[in-house]
Length: 276
Image 1 (cartoon, rainbow, N blue to C red):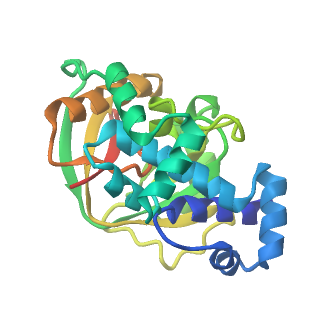
Image 2: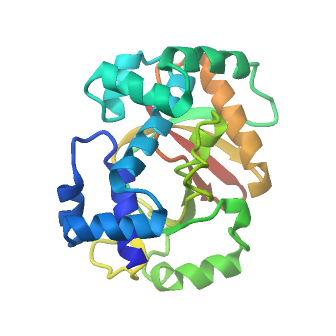
């Protein structure tokens, strides 16, 4: 049953900007609405609708802190089509209006020049696909993450078919944590999606995935790319990338979608999805 509720939680995450309700969620996972409400609360100690609102407001906080989008634009991107209802919900959650939250962050996220130890660039990726498994742990708490033995054990059944793919993690919570917006009242651990980033010649459409995995389509998009050497340096690489984007005031800005870390041959690469 928890696997089904994990799928429900991921669906809520992926549809934050859409006007979908509990019936849509129930249809997605093949349960009745009452079953979804009951089982989701048992798994996450919160109702699906309350969970969605918290995640919407976390994304709003990220966009307030890391983009120049106006409040009305942010509200729409986070699923609120009424500016006033968004502002009231945000005030309840953070005890600050969206405008005051943004002003407060400006005093703590003053963008110094990026540190020369890292190099960040803006790149564009064409349509790709990831195959991911959700773990309810921070990457630093996943023993062996990135080691060949761990990867081979977890992904052996997929790597045999997808030889050109790259090990990847996606981090839905890391930006909200960085702007001190991550909710700790209900959620006591990060979410880390672990799996494979497919090459442009790989195709997983005909592969029967293990029960814990899902396909994720990535449309053509821009991203900020920063290379680093060790997973222990992820936080430093993330801060460098954020400061780079704030300092450059580029035409591209953080989208709020999960950053990714790819295991390349000689280094790790942090990718933060951007919007124009």
